[in-house]
Image 1 (tube, rainbow, N blue to C red):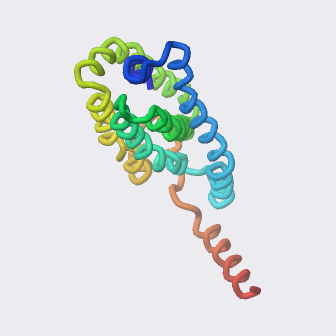
Image 2 (spheres, one colour):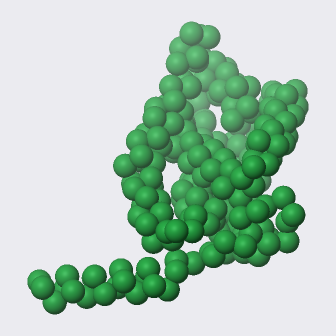
Image 3 (cartoon, rainbow, N blue to C red):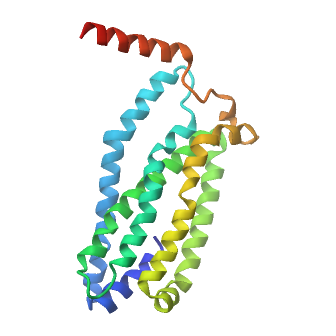
Length: 221
């Protein structure tokens, strides 16, 4: 995201000959994507989590279930960089790389919501320290990446520079999948994660009762 502050002027100001004001407007699709991501989260993912709260009651929902949204976001995030990079030719309509900002914005919101909630649920009373560590690391990258972003995009051109970023994102795509599968084992090994001893699957009684209700509904129909 921070690199795009250097990449967009190269693609749109130099490549498509936009002035600085119009180039500033090219970030709007990312904002629109973020709004769409929030709406999707509130309409689809949050209600699903509320159902899980009933299934796991009286226990808390394991943090790994917060990562469901990241399972969608991580590949979309990588694809967005490939999309932006290989449509950034000056001979291609500027609408093509512009629209890459929409899935990028959606995926960024999903990653933030999923990973932040995961960290909070996993670390509970030390979550503030964990979130602070995440913020420090993210800020270090945010401060360092723009220092070489312009040189990278000029040396590699926008296609290959964005491909490099897409490949890095692709390498990190399995992270939420691994955490979803093995996160409860990792939390049990951490002395800072008090949620490690909580059940990672719905209690059998709750699952059985839900299944019985479903069968009764089928028979009634």
